Amino acid sequence: MTPIEQLKEQLTLALQDLHAAFPLSEDVLLIVGTSTSEVIGAHIGSNGSHEVAEAIYSILKKQQQETGVKLAFQCCEHLNRALVIEEETAKQRGYELVSAVPVRKAGGAMATYAFKKMKNPALVEEVQAEAGIDIGDTLIGMHLRKVAVPVRSRVKTIGEAHLTMAKTRPKLIGGIRAVYEKTDEHE
Image (cartoon, rainbow, N blue to C red; front, side, top):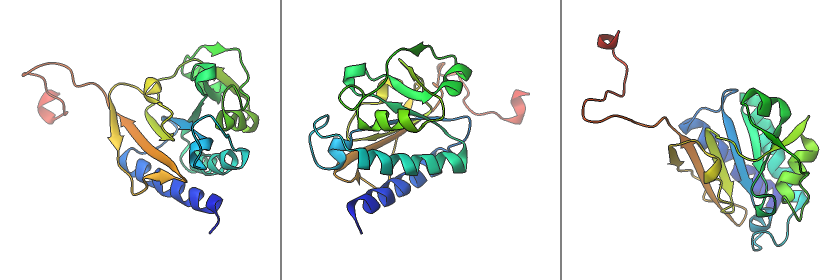
């Protein structure tokens, strides 16, 4: 198995685990942070790979086609971790568009690839995603809704990059008298 085939298999398994923990659907925005450099065993931001970005995008696109999940790709720190997202999704969710076009050295290989492949890509400064996948410790937490909950996977790495995934849940508010689950007596 080639390294590209292996990372595709790893990502497919990881997405299965995320979907089992938090069903991905057309109502879910999935934030994707990826260091293609880390995937190939290099230091983050040092050796972006078009080939790795293409492989990762192909698996995520397949997941999107199967579930309807919306995708947002986090840019690198040089674009302040802005996100590549379909313009329609940005408008539906009320996100403000910003002006920049990601390139490999200012945006990163993954965001640059996604921007080129999306139907009508746009850049937004921030989102509040319901779920996230972080490949290579790119720090996606700022773009997750409160409250983020880790999702454990059978897969610990994508290529050489550390994998972290999260789902979110509504805040549990109130105190000792608060009730968190609906029952018949609440009607």
